[in-house]
Length: 267
Image (cartoon, rainbow, N blue to C red; front, side, top):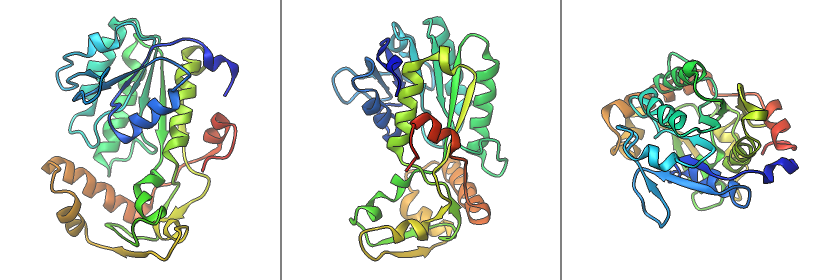
């Protein structure tokens, strides 16, 4: 990272309680004053907001110069949440709004990706904010229990041989921190695709674990019965569509921009 990363303060991370938000907060440590904006405050200093209504957002963003916005996973109307945040960010005089999107946002077969494409369009056409979009690929951390040896079996609801450009969440967070602290003077108007350095299948990834791992494909219905019971019907539908797409096409993305922003190859 460049010397300019020491300048400025006041970065609000909206969605700080999730794994991505927590990683971005950690990456910003020592570089900027960070404001954790969450749905439910669980620790001192958290700013609790309601993204559905926008309640609490204006106060949470007041005095900040930058925002990193992460929506809840497979939300039924992410563009509405983003509109609330953009309006309050503009009113608060936010200098730089960074949106956490996804690689391949305009993919009609995956409705929650399309919602992110709509969000990107709304951000670009809003007119009152300087912005940057980050588009990460799938996280290797989704298989952390296997990779660190805590689990010896993995079931996936798509082909274990489908290819992904897996990325490390810590690398994505490092780029987010750089973009946020360098700010809009450097990064306004940019959309950065963040893919890993290799196209790997889940089977390939599991081969890198410390011990032998059993990899099995299960039906989407079976996976949902085990892991999706807490999801709404809409959320299950969105994930099912994503798994069916993965089964046919995998999910890969370029890594050249990622490497340039990191100053080293992504992991």
